[in-house]
Image 1: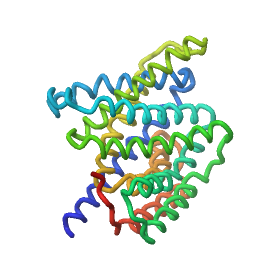
Image 2: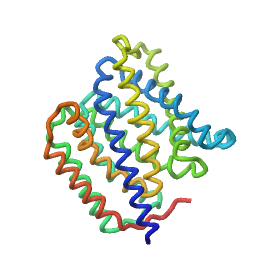
Image 3: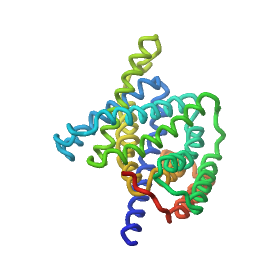
Image 4: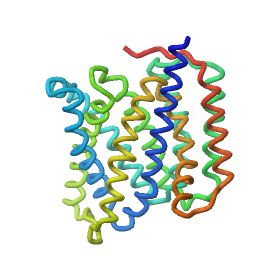
Length: 299
């Protein structure tokens, strides 16, 4: 019992840390998207993350384990993850961070349906209640500002959320021989392949694929936050959390992200928002409600 409680505690701790680092990417993306086309930002984000994380992966897991890894399957999982990452950048470009956060509040529902479909979870009443309460909390946390527009941007965000949930579950489940850093890195590599294909495809059809302003120190700093902190470190922490809690319960924490964004913006000079604080509190209650659960570990 104490082992399970310790695992739940560490899993939730990893999820909190993951969402804090993920939230840092929203303000950074807002700055970058002013002059970077989504496809250019997508490639730069993944390329920087892979360039930094591959050497770390070699040091942690060793060359032999890296070479023997399931690279073919990683291309599928990473490609799915990469497609989800690209769509969320497009969604933020077409709408705003608040709209994306509102739709991301449905992540627990997506993740629960995926776990039920794959046999990774048996639905219990307290977990179902936790899902509902989590979504309500996410909607409360993001209701302080009305979304700019829906349409295509909303569709991109919905598809992105579903792809991210499946790919993260597969990342945690399908590479048990690798460390958390290795699991994230190998799937980022698959995502980078997709990003490069999109980049060259967009270039061939005449789309803008390069930043429209000179890259300065501020943009390099924002890209570092967006690639290494908000994606690289956040994904490593989230994969660790999924391994301990399951993707559905770990995804509850996504709904607290608007509150973390508010905290970051508070440091940058914006005002405290009680609505988002209330939403974060409701999601925290949902996490507690859903803790007593039975998960069937995937083989």
